[in-house]
Structure formats: structure tokens, C-alpha cells
Image 1 (cartoon, one colour):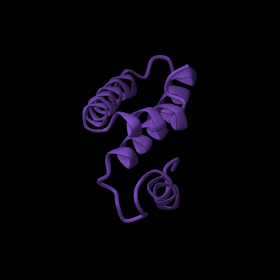
Image 2 (cartoon, helix red, strand yellow):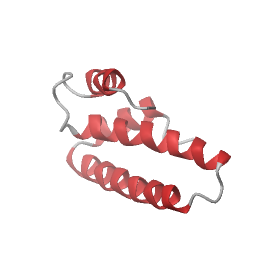
Image 3 (spheres, one colour):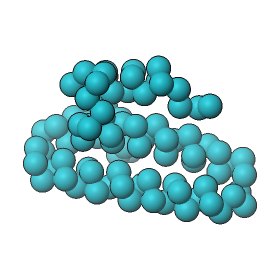
Image 4 (cartoon, rainbow, N blue to C red):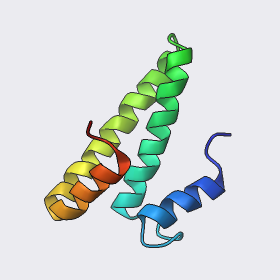
Amino acid sequence: MYLTSEKKTELFTKYGKNEKDTGSTEGQIALFTFRINHLTEHLKQNKKDHSTRRALIKLVGKRRSLLDYLKSKDIERYRSLIKELNLRK
């Protein structure tokens, strides 16, 4: 499996307040970004996998909503997270 509990703990430790803080906005955005990158690579190999394409589109929408929320609450945390995750090229 591509997303182990150790990887989740690592993401939440790095981007959240601690490893138990799975509800923080930054931690969720980091988790969604990791999953989006994985699904993007999968779709490069399997172009006709439409159910995965739909899941990817839903994940991107969820991440966008969380990013909009973070932007409205704290613009500095938003900007640092965007830079750290390389979401803007």
C-alpha cells in the first residue's frame, strides 16, 4: 500500500502540530497533496482508469476548499504551506 501509517504520522508531524493532530488544516492539505501526487502518477500509467480520475478530481476539490479556508483565516500560514508543498510553480 502506498500510504502507510508511518507515512501518515510523518506527514502530520511535519505539517500539523503533532502526530496526533490529524484534524489540522495544514496536515489534511499535506495528506491530500501526497494522495493527489500518487494518483497522478497512477493515471499516467493507466489512462483509462476513470474511477481513479473521478477520485482525483474530488480530492483536488477538497484540497482547494481547505486551501481557501486557510487563506481566509491566516494568509501567512497559507503562503508558507503553498511554498513548502510546491503547489504553485
